[in-house]
Amino acid sequence: PDNGMVCVQGPMDYLNASLAKLKVSPIADGYTLAGVHARTCAERNYTDGPKHEECFVHATLWMDRDPVHLGMALVTEPTLMGAYAASHSVSDLVTGMSELCGSSDGS
Image 1 (cartoon, rainbow, N blue to C red):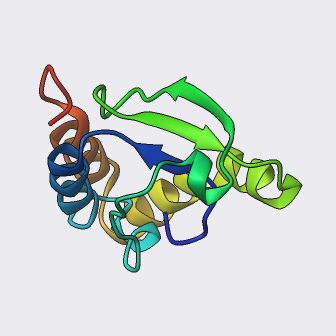
Image 2: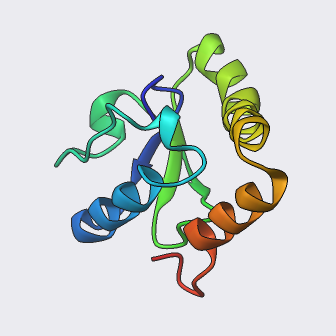
């Protein structure tokens, strides 16, 4: 995500496809500048992981030790979803999140 709260690690092609889906999802505003890099999360100083990723099952989440990032991880996506629902509808939010995470393998 743009705010650097987590690092997502996985196969490059999978991450590129996942990021493309994120950029057109209800939480797209949090991923406008995000990119895929050929480095591990540990190489980027995100050493707390791997953690299971619910939506993109072939990727893992990694955290750093920054308390600001830890706080962001709790509120960023719910805030983005709330803003999307307010400007669209709850139904559109549910549909969009289902499209983002809906396939059985998360791709």
